[in-house]
Amino acid sequence: MANPTPDVLDALLEHLLETQYAQLPEETIQRVNQRLLDSVGVGVAGHRADDAAGLIEVAKAWGSGEEATVLGTGIKLPATSAAFVNAALIRSFDFEPVEAEGPAGKQVAAHISGTTVAVVLALAETTGASGEETLAALALGDDLTARLAIAGGFDVYSGQDNTGTLNTLAAAFIASRMLGLTKAQARHATGIAVNQAAGNVAAIFDGANSFKLPMAFAARSGIAAAQLAKAGLESAADPLTGKHGYFQLFGIDAQPELAVQGLGESFHGDCTIKPYASCRAAQPSLQACAELVAEGTVDYKDIECLTVHLSERTLNGFVGARFAAGDTRTVAALFSVHATAAIALIHGTVRPEHLTASALADPELAQMLGRIELVASLPNSQRLTAEITARLRNGEIRHVRVEHPDGNILRTPLEHDQVVEKFSKNLEFSHPELATRKDALLHQLEHLASARDVNELIAALDPSKNFTPNYQEQLS
Image 1 (cartoon, rainbow, N blue to C red):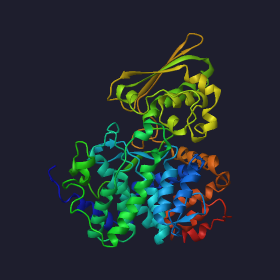
Image 2: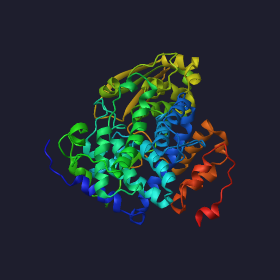
Image 3: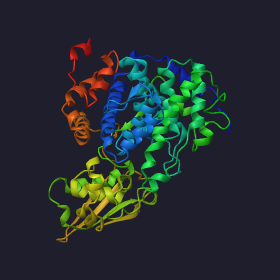
Image 4: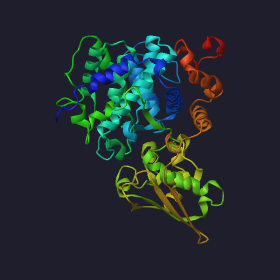
């Protein structure tokens, strides 16, 4: 691969290390706050995943340390381990912010925030960073990562999983800033991160809960890359655009120059706050099902049969397989158009509580699954479009089409109250005792820029401790 833009990494790192909080647009800070709020909420909900306790025990066995906290607990671990666990928790119900947007108005499938939020909170606690510096590191790390996502041209059907490739660089960028690396050291951290980047979507196809690990390994490896670079370890000279660099290894029709287009003028990141706990590719169809039953004129028991119309690529991808009645694996349901459509018809939505083993064993769900068929009838260009056609027992035909599912901040944004409601429900689902602190937690998250550090936020997220918010001190 030619090296048409050898200064890409230099420009990105200068932007990362030298931009200050005061230079960030208000809109950027608002979006970062929203992604932070949403990620923390789904991270707390992640404790209800069947494997959460096991993940924590494994991370504890890696070594002791008091640097950073596992969200929703009082457990302290080394920063690398805490970031690993928190990223896995955030990913557990596939409910975190997604869809990178970047220069030239492009968007690409990505899950940046699950790694960057886990990393920035772990390192903010470790370093004692102020609220402003925490938000600045998150905003800039997200910006660089979204730019690389767009420049790399990721294809979700390629078999790669960019939560383990792209996100490793994301973690290294944030760690480089928060650990005080020089630009030369940050370049080495990027190169070391590229050497750790890996991931494929095979686990998703098989409904295996290890699907969440690439995002978690990315958090751990990115921090370690920055730590190693700070200790003097060196990397290849140009780990992005050079021979065997990131774009050559992981890019698909890569355009490295896009990474620096409008750098410092526009700021990017995940642009979708998910209203449903499922793969984004399944959300158009499940939203159509939710809309069908939303007004109360159709009861799911009155549906004789229902056809979901998808693109051929979607149907042949990991969300297109039929979901077997009696399958109680959360991951298999999360990544299934078939399962999430049935759940949406019954419950009017899809949330983590509908994806537990006991919920998936519901006989009503098994019956609904048998009435749903999936067909490839839409053009492949309509990746996030779906149609449903329902025939009711009285012979009536109902049709619903969703062009663009809700949640994309640039096209179909959720209202702030909807984001807060999602956060509140996630607390209630996992830690009812934290739900009683909802207002205090919202205050902490929405006023983080005024905080001297993140300690009060972390304390408020520990359900084992009594917590009395000190708003006046927080704002001083």
